[in-house]
Length: 194
Image (cartoon, rainbow, N blue to C red):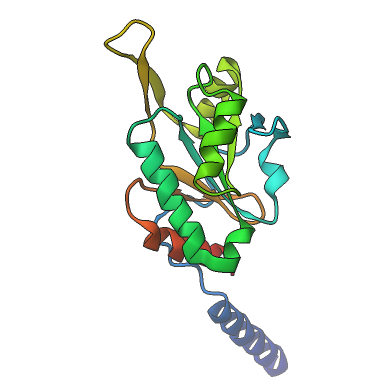
């Protein structure tokens, strides 16, 4: 009995020691680990290649929904993410930024191929038809809506401004708030990269 208690105590001490070595990450953004939505997409990238989340396994993936004619949130977010990549240095090669358009009517493959890589050549623009866009927005619980403009045929798009981050195994881990600067994003991505 004493031997059994000693073995149990040793096993417990080892388990505690191991758990101290693998402390959970301390994210500065919203931890959404275990989220039961935002699991996948089936869209086409700006080179014409069909893509799903599984294509990027082994990389930390950041997904942002926007549109190329956005006057404020989208270009500032994309510029912020370009700064994140610069701050990550060589680790940036282990990160994939995906820009999913909520305006497939105007955001053609050609337009995405010019707009998205202008921020960082590693960034990919993704699109689908109206039905595929609606499906992926529903899966990610992303809001978007067309807002009529002053001129006939002109419009803007209201849309969710945050981004999702996936770990190297393709599991959703974080939701990033818009406009916080590169620092907190770099902090959190480094934890997922290490």
